Image (tube, rainbow, N blue to C red):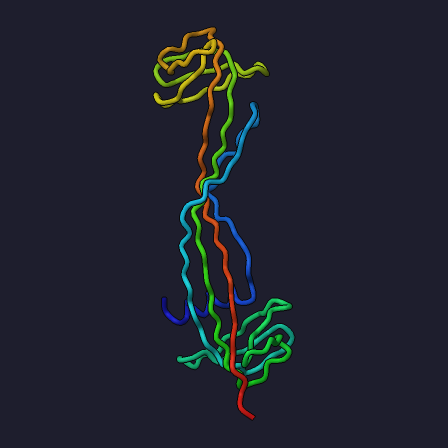
Length: 197
């Protein structure tokens, strides 16, 4: 990562600790049958970046710093209540003096999450051919489905595949929809050394 992009990243995250979800857009499911939702979490990946700057000026929650080693200036909007550990002591933005050298360690944890929705379908076969099935649901609506050969239906308490379905059969099946998400959490720790008097 080049220093400029690191600075821009830090401007966005300094003083922020939270969790965000990035989600692939999808059509909302129509709740015609009972649904069960669960999140299946993958293995998190952690990345830590460090940046250093010298305090030039503090005004309110704005901090102007000369970044090291390039010497360029950056403005940071610091979240109210953000704590800085300066020479081992807890300080706040109003306590920072020009010349204080700050080091921010920004740890980003990215975790893949699969949102799995399991919907139990009860209905009567209205039409079935190949992997295409139309079911009449209990509310009287017809819904069409493209069914994987591995999906198992229950017909009169016995398992059946899509090839076994015939018009008029009363069936129960589970429809599972998996939606990929990414959970991103950021933790920022800022330490520093006050200027010598």
